[in-house]
Length: 371
Image 1 (cartoon, rainbow, N blue to C red):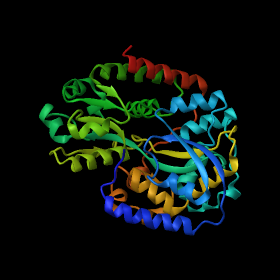
Image 2 (cartoon, rainbow, N blue to C red):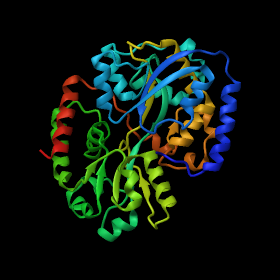
Image 3 (tube, rainbow, N blue to C red):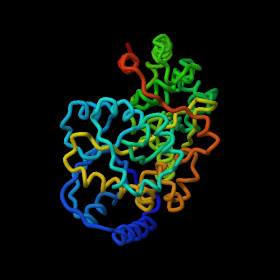
Image 4 (cartoon, helix red, strand yellow):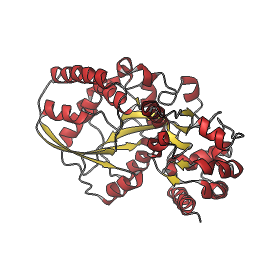
């Protein structure tokens, strides 16, 4: 579980937040709601506070891969009323007709969302902002144990993606443990960008080059695990490719453990080297509790709720009016809230033709299996 470093402060903030939420209730509802989300990706009391205020029983499930939830949605009858998903994946699902348009008149709190984030969503994945309520945004990078890296390989090019993409470096760093995200939507575009290619490439030859690159480093990757960062304070890994906020969590976890392990994080340097992603909430076309789904999305869009979610997960909220309520430790970290000048250099993923998606899937499968 993603634990805060400020338990006493959080108890106070949590009480205030609950009071604000209950006091601002305009109407009561009742019934049920079925929600699914990534593990540990919402405020500790967000669901229970919603249930108390609106008398709605929430069945809350978690999933561990985008592919798993995509399979459920595409098969139909997923059983969910609200789904958390990445905007780039949602961009592919919208044309399939398996999501329903939002009734934005029932989500007035959308006014609190960042215009920049809404603009990114509309221009890249959800024209007109008709399907996605933004939740969090961020990027990816490399979390590392500098002392362990230098002890293992004094010549390691810290701060450069050469460290993870060139076999001559990876061979040496494998001795202290390297983990990659189990996320083709992050790693393959990162590799394309590293090679100087379009992260949204539709050229099959580019993917051949990526496959050659990845095949050379595969023997030196210990695991593909989105949660490997949690084990960095025990020195199981000296390097983990992580989502930015998880790098911050790893650094904090190491500090809390007080074992002498110090972790750091760097973003892929340069123009177009790092990905800007946005996660959001959608309503499946076959949702049974549509009214409560909209009620929940409007509730999540309150500034105080967005701040509570961000303070707990340490991810960057898309809610502009929540920023003043978020712990400075989170907002001041470039891992969680990258500076504007770095964000301006980041790329976003577009929707790709099905043929290219199949090539990406094959590239990833071959990479993980070592073929």
